[in-house]
Image (cartoon, rainbow, N blue to C red):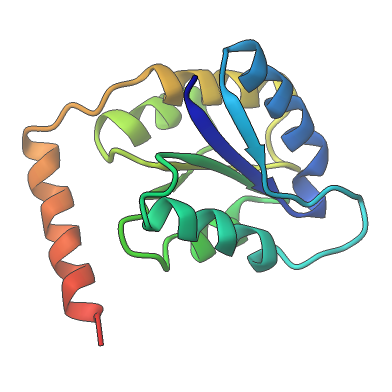
Length: 150
């Protein structure tokens, strides 16, 4: 059973719970990394632990959700080896995997409805990285990351 992590802040809790159900229906072992309530929380407190696990290859992929997705996207992309893609349509979700090999999908809980979110997650999970010219571009990003290490 493939494992996937999911986390949200208060702005994404309702969508997170729905996507968890969807992922379990698809046969995934879902690691819920919070939040688990509606009280206001800071998105980095939930985005950082998930992003660290993906960055360190302790998890292959994850899904982050906050109100717009912007905050979680910014946090996740601070980590080496993370390619977090904020998506708001099915085409972008598929391209995030096919062209960018995104290992974290980011969704706005106040932007996407449950049906659209499920379709974006499905498209991302079913898509395959195409490699080729796209790998060359990812290699350039890895070189940037190497140069940023202290």
